[in-house]
Amino acid sequence: MKDQIFIFDTTLRDGEQTPGSKLIMSEKIEIAYQLEALGVNVIEAGFPISSPGDFEAVQEIARRIKNASVCALSRSNEKDIDIAAQALKGAVSPRIHTGIGTSDFHVYSKLNMNRNSVLEQAVSAVKYAKKFVDDVEFYAEDAGRTENQYLARVIEAVIQAGATVVNIPDTTGFCLPEEYGAKIKYLTENVKGIEKAIISSHCHNDLGLATANAIAAIENGARQIECTINGIGERAGNTSLEEVVMIMNKHEDLKFSHTINSKLLYHTSQMVAELMHMPVQPNKAIVGSNAFSHSSGIHQDGFLKNRENYEIISPEEVGAADSHIILTARSGRAALNFRMKNLGYEFSREQITDIYPRFLEIADQLQEINDEELHQMARLIETISPAKKNASSLI
Ligand code: KIV
Ligand code: ZN
Image (cartoon, rainbow, N blue to C red; front, side, top):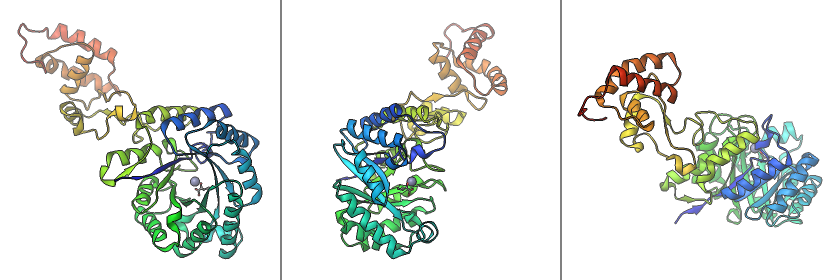
């Protein structure tokens, strides 16, 4: 029996905090529909108090989305919560996400408060949000650097106040996976009433650990992952949705299920990259342009014998175009022959061997050999090495 992991997408909130990624209303709606089609459970549509534009976007998304909860962010004060609740009015399944910083950094040097007053404000905020919606998620900002005993006190108190989801953000991306996993485990073992709420992970990628930390969280009792398409977000970004989904798909041993249609991942990634002006790095896991490209001779030869020698995910699983054999000066004869065949040429092993030194000379001058150069090379093969009658084995 697999445990379901809820996917909370925050591309339109934390993701949109990425400099240069500001969206207009129609673009936010387009992305929200795509996230709904993708199968996410919660769409965090924005932070309504932050600007009139964000308020309207949350309102519009709340009215239109029917198959996912729509969530609005607030700080832990009544004004923020009032505006969030107002923006969510038309939603089929509204969620208010309210919270406050709990690490000593936040308590003392950001909020100028003390631990008790932060705890009281957290409880008041949750109670206030409950007046508007049933589904209230509480975030303990900088939980990653919050002392576990105090964090447990806060989480216990907000669950008693009615929080349905408790978010444990590693806001600064500081935690190691073992440490973050242990924090989640500590809460499952030390918070009275923890079974009444879903524990959520929200990880940032400052040390490149956002995905590893989210996986450590679900292995230790969290049942919601907050993430973004392409891992965009504040500073170095958030846990990437496509990575956690494919980890769950590929590791049956983890025994987690989810509702994401992985075949839509590539298209969703491209849409977000384009609308948010955030190109995907070529070597990005799952959706990068090199994720299904093979360029060295050893890999190409192994891949052509059996794709599973070098691919753990097939491109169709994520809706990407077929794998590519890239021809460079590191490619071998098998790859050259494969690409020639794709262009309709049938050469013998001898012909490919005869042209191969010329291929390497050209490849040494170029980054990559394209189809046009292959056609030219094919004409050359036919002159320097015409097919023999009864040509011996084709490669
Ligand atoms: O990183 C963070 O702590 C956040 C909260 C507002 C949830 O984004
Ligand atoms: Zn965040």
